[in-house]
Length: 242
Image 1 (cartoon, helix red, strand yellow):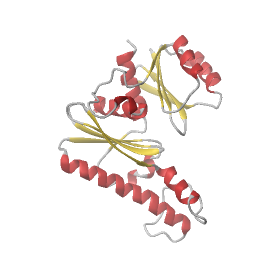
Image 2 (cartoon, rainbow, N blue to C red):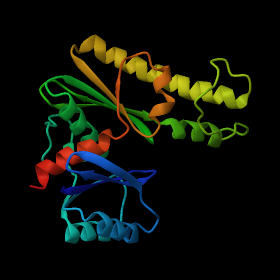
Image 3 (cartoon, one colour):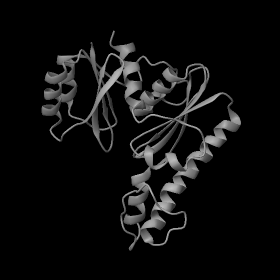
Image 4 (cartoon, rainbow, N blue to C red):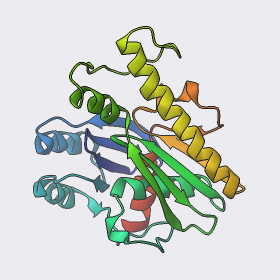
């Protein structure tokens, strides 16, 4: 079966998703020596196509390697995508947001879509029923909030998120967990409610590496998929790597 590499270079991690046709078979965290690791993966999987979504300044040799070994496409504002970008400056839209929107439209065509990504930042991405990306909002993500409280105070520690904590924190750590995770959950529910009041027939998608910390605390029914970005990249690759 034909193999496609869908690469996501984010602010925190660099990953490669491997698809056989439309089946996701692996998601690989790239090692520090990106080029050497990619060369090994190319030899292992023999991909025919590749697509790169990058929000960082990655080595130019990455694109050269992918271009030599595969039919390669770098996601940008000029890519063929399954929705229009009629407002703002398309060239300023993050590649990760384009991919997530493409996945939402591919999954829920003919509906209003609110695609929420939990990464370094939370992005709320709205695509209307006419498949037009109208924008949304951006707010600090989970790790950013924990770091901000640690770095901008004298005594608050840097804590790692946990899954089980009380509403009423009983020490500094549980106060921070409750404040950040429950606070973000109420923020997400509140934004969703605001969209639902304005737009009927709204499909809501949630993705991102921190997704599991929030699912138990959200009251709204949401389609969740940790691999939404990669599925969007695959859909865009199919349009641009004919």
